[in-house]
Image (cartoon, rainbow, N blue to C red; front, side, top):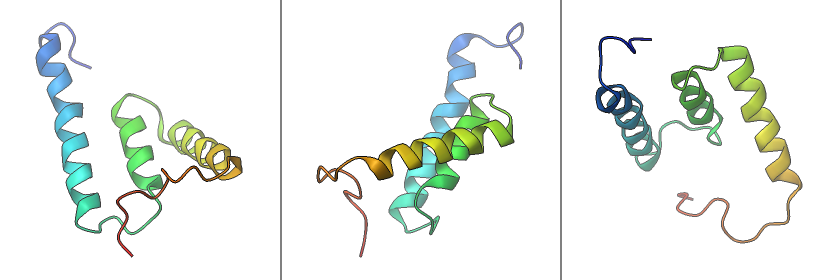
Length: 79
């Protein structure tokens, strides 16, 4: 978006800050979904158009749903 005006370090700080903010929200119980909104927001921040980001996140969720539970999914979730 601003490659000619900002150094790579500055360009990387935005997505990093957003990721930390989203993780803080997850730790407080927000959002109340299964993580789909965080996945979509992260993909959009990386430059994916919203419809593509949603499709990728849904495909990943479907793939995870077919894998056997190895005890890792849901780790840290509050009951």
